[in-house]
Amino acid sequence: QVQLVESGGGLVQAGGSLRLSCTASGRIFSTDTMGWYRQAPGKQRELVATITSGGSTNYADSAKGRFTISRDNAKKTVYLQMNSLKPEDTAVYYCKAAISAYRGSIPRDAYDYWGQGTQVTVSS
Image (tube, one colour):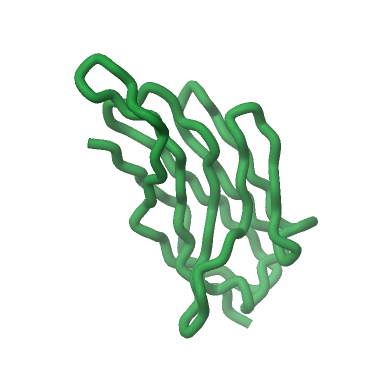
């Protein structure tokens, strides 16, 4: 019913940039906090950045100064601009969104939804 569709991942050289996008679709009443997480091989999934519906942001220390999260509420889309990429940024990046979806004509409480993940590979 609710789906998050990601795009923008790929292969980039160290020092380069990528911009990830994630758009929510379905019978959605509202999209609340949205964020990006990543998981490298053999490592636990970790938070990269989050942004509330009002635009307040939070970043992991590793992302501060290099990554920027933003959103377009009308498009139900969250972005992650990644600059000065390092090989250590290589991971599968996942979009997460707290979404209030409709049950019939009535919105239900917000639940977390995850995207399918998109691979980001940074070569040295």
